[in-house]
Length: 68
Image (cartoon, rainbow, N blue to C red; front, side, top):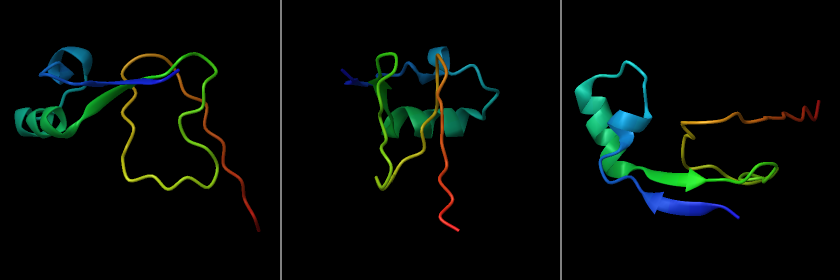
C-alpha cells in the first residue's frame, strides 16, 4: 500500500541531481514523498496527472497506449 509522507527538508539528501539551490528549495517546499510497494500501480490509464513524479529510489515501468 502506498504511503505519503512530508519531505521535511530531506530532498537535498534524497535527490543526488546537480540542481540549483533555489530549485531544490522549491521542490522541498512543495513536495511529498510517495512510497509505493513493488508491483503496485500509482497511476492508472485515464488518470489525470497534476504532478511530475521524481523517482528517488527504484525503478518504474511506464506504458503508452497509441489509439491511432
